[in-house]
Amino acid sequence: MDPDEVQAVYLEHRLVLERFLIGVLRDEAAAADALQTTFSRLLEKGHLVQQQDSLKSWLFRVAFNEAMLIRRRESISRKHAENVAWKVQGQSGTDQRLSQSVHYAIQQEDVIRVREALMRLPESQREVVEKRIYQGLKFREIADELDVPLGTVLARMQAALKKLKPILKSAYEE
Image (cartoon, rainbow, N blue to C red; front, side, top):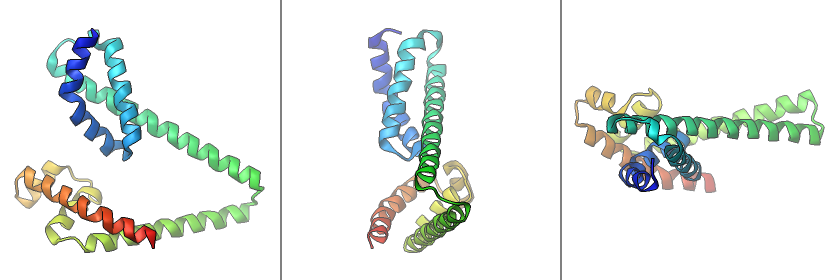
């Protein structure tokens, strides 16, 4: 694909791909990296994609694969750093189990903070967040289950996230 075509595709699909990647990675910088790599792949292999409809699905597939690569790299790096830390500190098995217990306790504390923050949301927003996060439902499924338009579900989720951000930020600053 020539650079002008790639630029046109970028302008058309950048925002939706960026939002998708942020949702998958939960990290704007990593999402930006995946987005950049996705369009680099389009420059390299875009000529293999035949139709406009398949181009969009191809972009999402490539973006998702890039996001998974980033996640795997981060996981490997984190595990490697933990292993190095244990070796450097000369931790024994008992110390490691104690550290894992402390880590688990911190995770449980995080869960409690999130649940408390959710309880501060209006019922309609809390319901959408819980169905999305805890039950893993898609927004369309939530809309069908609640018998409300999809846009209403998306607006409630957006409003809930906007309210949760400062609540959780202040909870972690304490």
